[in-house]
Length: 298
Ligand code: UTP
Image 1 (cartoon, helix red, strand yellow):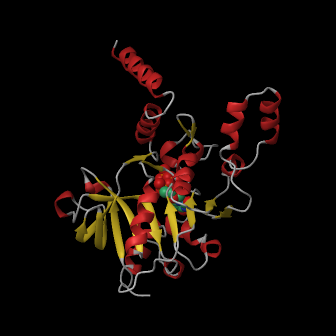
Image 2 (tube, helix red, strand yellow; image 1 turned 90 degrees about the horizontal axis):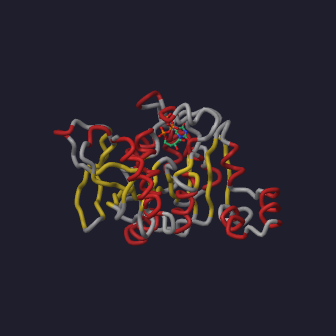
């Protein structure tokens, strides 16, 4: 396949890499996976799974590591808890507990034995993905969007095919990976490259790569031979740059907002934003946050 005929094969599978150590949010992540930290009333990972399902994804592949068993348990039945809730007629709570359980066979878990980088984590899913396009969702990035960020990307994929990356404008490109745009049509940007943490004055754009990708399976062969890059890790962006030499890449400036839960202040922002956006409890959350700020000022 070359850039003249980008693949539009259906998108059915999503890879969620969850094998990192989450060192920027220690000590909270010493014994709890970062992805299980609550963002208001549910673990962060639930929002990301919901985003993928809203885009029509049929099969979710988690790339896990040691000490990540809580993620697997969360997506399984909690038989004792469910029985107790049923016996006490706590129907609403029972429904909430059952929400995370998907049809048997629609979630897979594969282990990355040592955290060698995001590119390596994605490569660990190669056999389960097989020879078809797939999405990658970084679970520490929460995208607040309607339709979901991946749903917007899937729509763009239906039009142009190939590889699609979600981007969002930022004030300071020097702390992110940003895209080098070639041409733009509405929110869809044809890419000619990517630059990791450019100096502000040299940045080819202010559009940072925010953690959602639709990739063609040819990336796996490139990841297999990918040499360690920044931080001594196998970087997904390095393999994507190589794939870009013979496949088309578009960036989608999706309509929504990214919350980076990977560090403490970003996590706080996400927690507050999702509390405020909660359909039922949002107004009470706003009052509680105002009250907390007032106490802080005294
Ligand atoms: P991050 O670098 O943001 O996550 O990787 P981290 O390594 O957990 O965080 P810090 O830097 O130590 O605080 C983005 C995503 O890729 C996964 C992480 O779990 C995270 O969801 N990842 C990263 C892996 O699965 N394996 C790796 O080797 C690296």
